[in-house]
Every structure is written in C-alpha cells, then in structure tokens.
Length: 480
Ligand code: PLP
Image 1 (cartoon, rainbow, N blue to C red):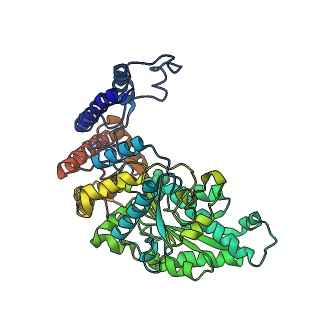
Image 2 (spheres, rainbow, N blue to C red):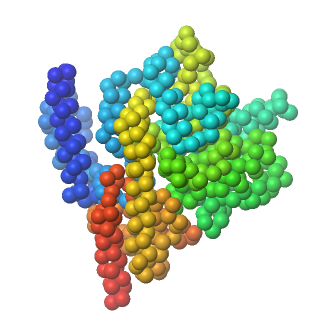
C-alpha cells in the first residue's frame, strides 16, 4: 500500500468507523457464535499472494464483525467502561504512524517528555499529593504510563519487594536475595482485584487476603491485627494493596486508617489501586473518596477505563521513583545514550523494553475535552447510575446491594441465587443487554455499570425495561 492508496483507504476506514459507531445500537450487544466459529470461516494458511483490500474489508464485515462483542454499544453494561473517544482514536492513529519505540529519552525525546508532562497534568487534576508530581518542591516521585492496572500493581509490588530485601539485608548482608522471600508477606482485601494475587504469585511472596467490613471496606484494625500475627510468626509485612472503587461493587478501602498502620512499619509499601474510580477524582466533590491518599507510596488509575482514552493507558504514580527504577534497571551498552542518567528512561519504570507513544491519546483527550468536559462526562455517569438505582429501588421484587457512589449499581432479585443466575443468563442470551455477575456480601448479584460516553436517561430506561420484562417472564414461569 503506497501513500496514495493509504490516503484513500484511510479515509474509507474513518467512514467505516463512523458508520460502525453510529449504527451500533441496531445490533445485538453480544455475538451469537460458538467457540471456534471463525476457524471454519478463514483459510488455514496465510495467503501466499497479496489480496485486494476490498476483499479483506468484505471479510471484516461478514466474518469478523459477527463475532465482535460491542463494548461501545449503548446497552453494554458489563465490567467497567472501555474508554473510547474520537480524540483518543486519532491520538492512537498518530502514535501508530510515528511508530517510535520510546524505551529511552534518546529513542524519542518527545515520547518521553510528553508522558512526564501529561502524567503531571493528570496527577494534579485528580489531586494527588505534590510528592507524586515531577519536580514539585520536595518531590522525589513521578508518573509513568503502563499497559494495565495489573502491571501497575505488579511493578509496585516488585519495587516494594526490592525495598524490603534491601532493608533485611542490612543485618544479613551475606544472604542471597532469595533467602528473604519466604519471610515476606503482602496484604489485600477480599474485595481487591485478582491481579494482586497474580502479582504475589509471580513474585513468589505470601499474600494474606483480609476480610473487609460490612461495607466491603478494608479497615485499619483488621490490617493491624494481621500484621501483629504475622510478625509474631517471624514474617515481614512489606506491601499492602488497597482499592478505591473495587471491581465487584465499587467499594472504598479506608486509607485514613490503613495509612498510619503501614507508616508504623519499617518498610511496608502502601499501594492504592483506583483503576476505575481514580479517574473520578478530577471532580472536586469526589475527592473525599480518596481521603488518606497522602499515605500512599503508589497509586494507579486507568484512563482507558473511565476517562475516554482507548486501551492501553494505565497511569501509575510513585512517591519515590528511584525505589521503583532501582528494582528494574538493567543497562546494556546498546540502550545507553549521551543523556542517560539525566533524562528519564521509561524502560526502567516497567517490565517491557518497547513502549508505544501512549501519552499522545491522553494528551489529545485532556486538551479536546478539557477538565471541565471530562468532569461533565463522569458526573453524567454517576447521575445515571443513581437514576438506575432509583428505578431498581422502586420495584419491590429487587434489592440494591452496594452503596452507589459512582457509575456501578449492584442489584438482585430477592430470592435464591439460581433465580438471579437464570435472570442474567436470559438477559445476556437475548443479546439486547449485557451485564456480568459478582459476589457481594456473600450474595450473587448483577452488576450494572454505566459505560457509554453518550448515555442518557432514555438508555437507562430502555435497559431497565429489558431487565423488567425478563424478570416478569422468569418469575411468572416459576409460579406455574
Ligand atoms: N483493579 C481494579 C480495581 C479493576 O477493576 C481492574 C479491572 O477491572 C483491574 C485492577 C485490572 O485492570 P487491567 O485489566 O488494567 O489489568
């Protein structure tokens, strides 16, 4: 494809995307296909000879699209939002065209410098303490874009593990690093995302999963008791992962209680995972939900969830960047450059070497919407979630199970788990609406998350009508 053909096909692709996104709502939300559906439709070998573009696009329409789950559909209410917006798509398009691999400052100075600047903009906008903002007075911290919240948690735990091993080595300098691993213990709540468990698995450290209180909040006393028990067993508490906006029910851990417990320890790193909810802190009225953030050693949030930025864009800030990078530095000659040491080299801030120019899309979104536009978007979702909650509460067959603070409502039909399983299965099978389940306070519940950028009250009413109809049908069939 030469530049002239790209010019034509590129414009056609923009038209295709516009048509896709503006006609999406006439389709099923989820595809009606069985596992392996695509293998029967595509050849078993890659083509030997070049193919016509029109033929490829024909296959997109007839073979690929029928197997796509439409995350941008107005009746997609599963998971958390998958960020998407035109400025972000354009930012990614430009990043793909530039095609730089910004592992070091020299590998593409603008790629590195824009990332640092945008992370500072965003960090300030959500009200992070100044210690996390590059070069603010007294700060040793900064931010970096990772691919996922899972990676943010993993590298934070890795940095904490490194810090703890260094601390323990003071008294045992002759021991190998690995000798300390059996002593290290990390903590999280039962409500934490499973990526914390995965990080502990990868890093070969113990993880103690603590019970939250009746509001699904991890409390300081619970952590304090667990730490005391573990210290009595000779273990070393080195990492606590807390959550602001849990996956199952959007609950918030109590950082004001947990923070001082971590600070009282000689080397216990406090991580705060705000993968979804962290974005909401751009609204001043929601900042109380992050009370206690001043105790954090690291914090992450995903604009690719709830800030209209396409995957992947997961923001991680650390209080001390040297502690992070010293756990990750490997420095072969072929990656060094004249400004090594002085300029930021993001390859030392995460696991992969290669990095895309991801800050472009975040920068485009921050500029095109402005903080005020993004606040409006977040507030609309919260207003609509509360509207959905009010509809559920008016129907005595249902109960709302979580405290609806942001865009997630957890609800269920009063009655046994099986009825709720059947209700959700029937709704999802209809292809009209998509939601997922979770367990909250020991109950099987259905999660309804507001995710669409342009969601309105009418969309919420449509969704509620579909739920209502299925519930009526199911309950009537049970009475027969
Ligand atoms: N943390 C929380 C609170 C989440 O809700 C999720 C996913 O929804 C994750 C972490 C994992 O996110 P990622 O897919 O970016 O690894």
